[in-house]
Length: 513
Image (cartoon, rainbow, N blue to C red; front, top):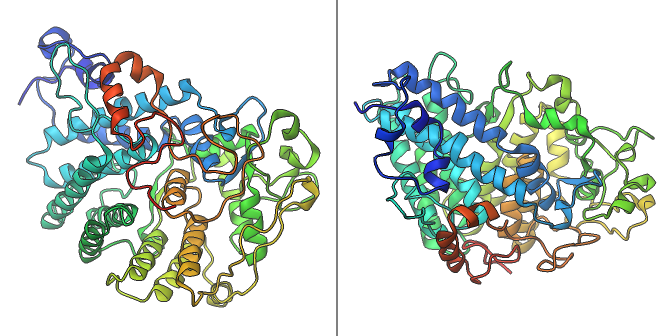
């Protein structure tokens, strides 16, 4: 087995961002380098990749980015402007670096060192696919196939998003097959698997569920490929109930970052949630959010306020709903951190069934099962309560009329499944958005792809490339990448549909008007 230098392992940022030299191992081998890695050594890298991925620049790279773009939250911190579509380059640099250093680097080691350990190899590849898809859905083209494979004087090229997706499908299919064929072989044990604690069967379902997610993501741009991947995913077995939910366990060395930042009064419930929750009489409202401190009312705020507006009475944080009791900052080391809900698979299957694919049920059956499974994931198990919600005909309401904004109800569709196909698509998209919470990166991606749920226009946009009444489509490439890998970034820009590095540029799969 080859020699593994500690310096070389720890930070692929050198590989990725600085076009290092040849003979890297010779020149950077530490006296403390390891001659070989034992299975225990290899397992030790996986917690880093999992926790690094889940916590990756969480406040600035997720909560104040996708969390605002998908309108789960309204921003109450006057110092921030990301909710008005302003690009903060330091935030994106941290997000970009964190992916390759904290996640891809340890995963690469695991994959390279586990050719004779099939279950560990498969799970590392599954987690790698999970992380990469979230970041190509942020930026579009990113370094992928050539990461760690470079020559002196060359930058690291970017892959176009279509090629990345096609490779992710292959990785997930191969990893799932490898895992299925070796299902009884131990994988990440002794506390090294923060997601499923070494349960290979749950990892297999997670892999197929992720494949199903990606299949629907490309369903408008490549419907034939999408159907093929969706059918393959379903045949392999996807997540089916709340017991299959994928959470990262919290613990003394790894906290839930949403709990952690909830004490900072930087964000509150959105007007979107208020309109839907109150109109639908959704029993999840007091679980997701808490009443406002000032008057014990559930109230959501509008997106895109300027500082003077953010401190106005009904727009300030004490008059808006904070996160619910599950996200108490005192429980940051106890509350598990969401990776993926089983409920999502039913909404994906419902949409697939609307496309004419055999998804194991009718669109209505799968839609209703998605709602039921989401309720169960939040501890709502009384069937009469679930059935009442599923069959509800009430409509969304006008949120926070006292705030002074012209904010009509978000939409005019009920929960009860419609007879109209387009309304059915909106219902599936809207209920999936509710059920995905707090998975903001996925919610934003699906809003861009489907156009659902509807969104309120920003009160103000401070980005000249993005009007306030339109949704931001991507995050621009970090200046850091341009400084350190400039020629490759310039080539990557030409891979974008418009050839322009703007927030208004649509990604490859984002084609629905």
